[in-house]
Image (cartoon, rainbow, N blue to C red):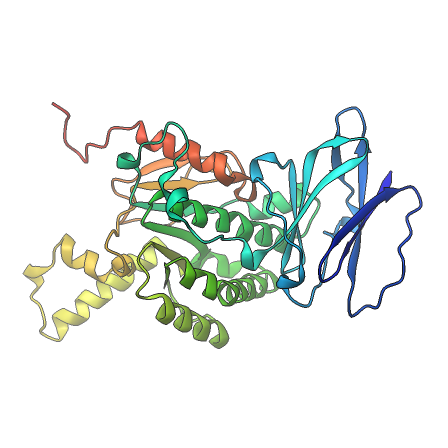
Amino acid sequence: MSTIIIAFNNTDIAFNISPEPSMEAVPSSQLYYTVCLLSLHNHHHNFLFNQFHKRMISLRVPAPSSFNLQRLNSQALERRWRLGRDCFLSFSPSCVENRIGLGVRSTKSEMAPFTAAEEETLPEGLQPELMPKHVAVIMDGNGRWAKNQGLQPWDGHRAGVEALREIVELCGKWGIQVLTVFAFSTDNWIRPKIEIDFLLSLFERTLKSELETLAKNNVRISIIGDSSKLPKSLLEVINEVEEVTKNNTRLQRIVAVGYSGKYDVLQACRGIAQRVKDGEIDVEEIDEGLIEQELETNVTEFPYPDLLIRTSGELRVSNFLLWQLAYTELFFAQELWPDFGRNGFVEALMSFQQRQRRFGGRKS
């Protein structure tokens, strides 16, 4: 067993490996540190996380900008762990003479600004003219991912936020216009209160921290779902983020919170019934177009997803966008959401581009 000490100060990242590590005393106002215990497999040149007290290692820092950040290619990583709320620790799979590849990056800086060059570069095999306009995602498996790692459920949700940032960035670069994610279902209200409180708090903190980056990247945020049970502080943040980003045009990110497909159809029916009652429309005027106008996805120009991705190997849509998925192509990935990443997203897009969409018709 080797002990790795990782020290963070305002400019440097320092680490070493020693059987009996020591650290020079530094004023706590300048240095924040954590000790991570890892078991070293010399034959396979990789590291296994030691489930120390069954808890994820944690780190507190005064501001994400205090790090010397090093961006790592996610494809080169074997394991990735979140540290606390505002940073992320990554270990390279290779180990040469007991040296470790290490990177720390701020979650607030995770979504890099999109550039024209990056937007034009698609992975080999993907055709820009066949890219979906609207992708929907059921981000499933955060809890199981955490359990597999010997961690708590909220650690999985933190890792899920990290995974989502990568997909949002890729959508912006590759010309996808709408990304809808299922963040919290109406059915999730039956979960333990401590988990619900954490999820909503994490959502609020994430929206706050991403606001400036969203504006720079020209990303519009829209929130759909039943907001009646959401905390007042979260509603205030939602209103602010939607207002600030409403004119952004590169990518629209729709987040479904307190949402279900049944709820959406029900509230649409109630809205139409009220309009009939008020004499605005006649019953004979009710058609698919009118229902579409009342569904919560009326916030976007492209309300019908072209592609739905669900992770974790589950083969169902779980009460998500029931009306809107009528002709959506479905892709079910085996990976848990925190492990899905770029490669999984490319595989889903490849699958989508190989399909023939007939919408009930027949190719001649």
